Length: 293
Ligand code: NAD
Picture (spheres, rainbow, N blue to C red):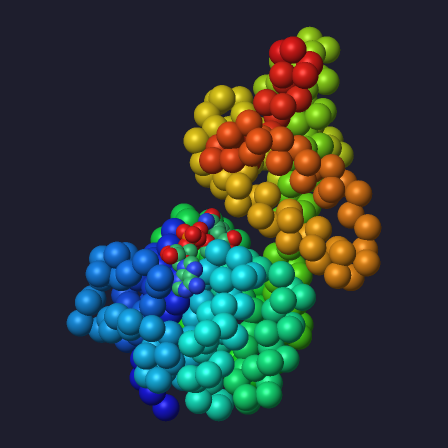
């Protein structure tokens, strides 16, 4: 029963999430391949900076991960010097990164052989939610592990929802990202047609917010488009990563994803134009260019 908690991945999301745990009085052992951020964490007296995952794993029974994608999580857990080698039996890994549900299940199977538990707990709410501790967590794993993690997750988030067995948190996250991307493209297509047809987009928005076309993109993204301000926000690059995960899992599960495939190509077009760093609302500019608006 070690007091400290392990935290791996102190990037855009991980840094403010770790900071909130420290604000709540927790002790952390942290690791990142780039350790510059670690020295900037608050309450340094309760932070131990580990030089390796092995050093971290020896000091903790719970490890939180906030890494970019499936290969990074796989490497951290089952790769060279991975957590699987050095955590004690009975330890719990909480992976908060957004990665493939299939890869999550594969990693979990390996961990089961060592009696190490894992839950997937990806988030929505972005950097703002991470800073303010208002993230939504989608949790996959045993109910007992969810209960065990709840106190910690509540420090970093507002809503913590148990979605089912291991991998189901990732599945829900992927479904959400797929739906928001398709939704954004559907709105962009409609509005380009409407504007080319001579209608003021503000008026179109007001009407459709009361119609069956009402959707998240219209509520949340259209104001960004009307302001013509495509500074992120949530970037095209990050959304493309999540759409790719949906396509990978669609392949794994043999589920055809027609709309998602098309949307993926549109997002890749923005990346090919060097606009991957823009806000995802910039997808409408592809339509506008073709319609000569
Ligand atoms: P980021 O790239 O800013 O941070 C990742 C951190 O992990 C970096 O500090 C990097 O040095 C470190 N890292 C990479 N590989 C490592 C390894 N093998 N071992 C140790 N450290 C390693 O990414 P982020 O924006 O914080 O996103 C993290 C995850 O959260 C991603 O899966 C992303 O999709 C998801 N997410 C991001 C947002 C957002 O708005 N940024 C919102 C919701 C979910």
